[in-house]
Structure formats: structure tokens, C-alpha cells
Image 1 (cartoon, rainbow, N blue to C red):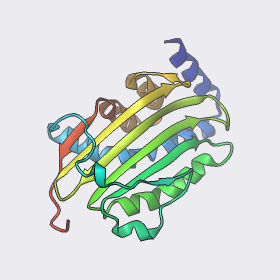
Image 2: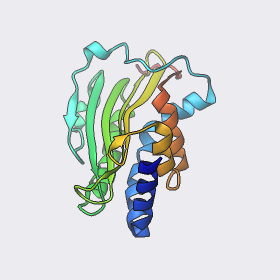
Image 3: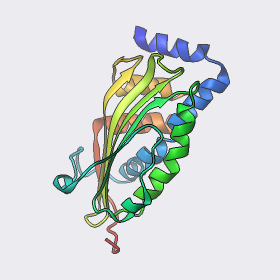
Image 4: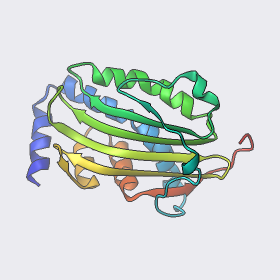
Length: 199
């Protein structure tokens, strides 16, 4: 695929430190994707992706690049968030802002009983540069029901529509687990989780 070859060559042309920083930021995405995918890998999925049963009760809170939700959302049920992650770039500090925001975003999600996250990813080497890889994600869990699901859509490589396998090929040299999760989540998975007595 010519686009994939050009993207791979463009990545190789970047200084090693820049490549590792950009994909280090993307690897942080594994904290979001891998919990559901790990469960799917250890037990057969219970079906393809569907929106959560509580979707109609969601009032989405929208956050821009590097923004973190306020602690006041801690008690929201369901907690529904949408994150812009389209500025994962080394040259303007976008990758650093992304990395600094993720721990707080993760911390607000973990205690939630019902959580749904939509996010929009784009990784590029320089601000305004061609997108190396991008996708839109949807991940949710319901601890009371004991279910979770993940899906990745609108995958792009070099700014063009692509298959998950093509994006995974670009990511794999930097993070094989994230590449595998991207391929699995592109198919959409729904899994059973332990039910929480606290919910």
C-alpha cells in the first residue's frame, strides 16, 4: 500500500527521540484500550460492540486537548465523556499535554459504576503536519451489569481512510500491544466483567 509505505518512511525520517515521544504518547492509549481487550482475550466475547444500555441517560461532558474533567464529576452516574486527542504532536507540546492529562482522566473513570468514553485520536510529527494515524474510539463499562465494550472506527493512515491492520503496522514497532488492541477493537468487542457490589 503506497500510503502506508510513505507513512512508514516519513516516520523513519524523524529523529529517534521524536518517533519515540510521539508513539510513547500513543502507547498511553493502551491504558484505555487494554482493560476491555484483555478481558476479551481471556474469555470469549459475548458479542460485537453495541452502545451501552444506559446511553439515553448520558449527558456528555466534552473536553479539548489536554483538558481534564473536574473532580465534581466523581459521583456522576453514568459518567459520559468525550475527549479531543487530535493534537498528539511533539513539536508544539501536544504529546506532553496529552500525557499529563491522561492520569486524571483515568482516575475519574476507574471508580465510576457506569462509564462511557468517546475520543478522537490523531498523531502527527509536527503541528499542522500530515496525520500519521488516527481513529475515533468508543469504550464503556457497566459494573452493575457486568459488561464492557470497545470499538474503534474511522481509522486513518497518512490522513486517508485505512484498515485497522494498516494502522497497526505503523504503530507495531513502537507498541505491539496497542497495535493488537487497535485491530481487535476495530472489530468491536463486548465482554462480561465481574459485577461490582458497590454499584
